[in-house]
Length: 93
Image (cartoon, rainbow, N blue to C red; front, side, top):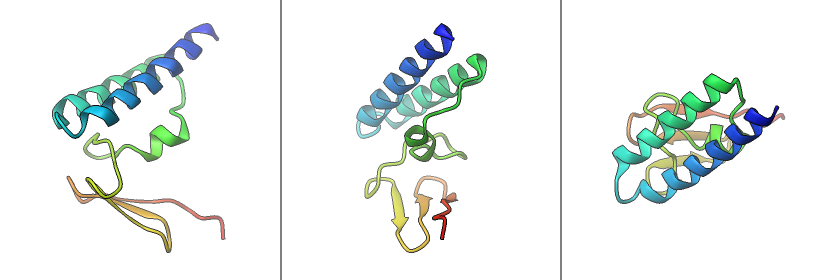
């Protein structure tokens, strides 16, 4: 239980640092995303919803609206402009 709490803190820290470094060094930001995914897998911890929706599943890029992703509000679909992957989020309607 304690290891999952520590893992969650590290995942959130790595995600925050990846968001800050995506503008200056995109490859380093991708490495941070790979590290946080590995931490989640090894400790069997679910990624927080904010982190899950803020990362492209195909290319491990941090998605920032207007910088490297495009969001359509009608059906909530986020398009990664690095690889072209489309992530659709159900609205519950």
